[in-house]
Image 1 (cartoon, rainbow, N blue to C red):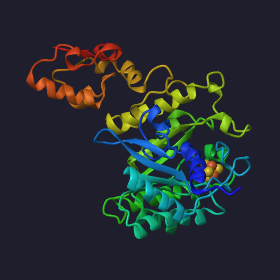
Image 2: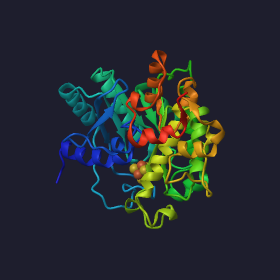
Image 3: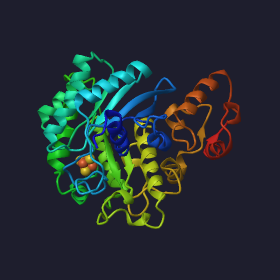
Length: 375
Ligand code: SF4
């Protein structure tokens, strides 16, 4: 039976949930939150506060690739369907008019060839930009294997582009897919995206992001952090996302992370630790080589990476809350950028005697007070 546009959108937007690289939130709950009553509308936290609504969908869930962690790979038995570029563009504009969406995130399984798929994604953006004169946010997924010319076209049309790196290095990547080539399909286009968005280049306004699938191979966190360092500091990407591998969705012969076999929920704790490390590198002034790993190269699952760093650096503490600089305060476990900003403001008007005066209470306050002095 033929599906109508909304039925197809229902299937395709639901299948787009595994791709997190669209700035759909920063907390675990945010990232996996489904949208309102319509499954294709996602709440996205705004920098000015509150939420906006983004339409997120695949153009097609048919795929000729074989990524072993992915439920949409070519040999799985899922109901396949596709939306035409015009269908998606028209639907988006209808929602946009009715609900004031803040943008669209478009991805796709590989329909025949990467180039054909990238062209369809680009065609959708082209219709939005030219036929509907839409000037708002468009995020396009870069399809591994698409030509640099097609990626260039995507960057011309989009506000943001993303290409999933998936694994830290060719050795791990090869365990995840027989179809894709790490150097040719991932690293070369990531470098191209970086060059084209460098300051002064023609696509400098376009934001680039990427995503790791975590725990599908036997990579450890220190390998991922090494790549994160390169992605942020050499390629100058905007954000990195992490998606915990979920074995039920993947192929049985994929190695996966052995230590999670007994405690499946720990997969999400590992994902969370990588997000915490990401925040330390992006917002707290930590260098990659300052992060502390356990034997085996992974972050502790019990404590957050900042607390572990503090335990390894007793000489750094106590931090004097009434005179330490912002960078030192940000290293105190339990204090984040919002509370540090508050401390810097409040202490202009008098000495801070405890954290309760700043509204910081409970476990967070107890944790931070172990590392602070109030003199
Ligand atoms: S390219 Fe790989 S990850 Fe993307 S839809 Fe196809 S099988 Fe899944």
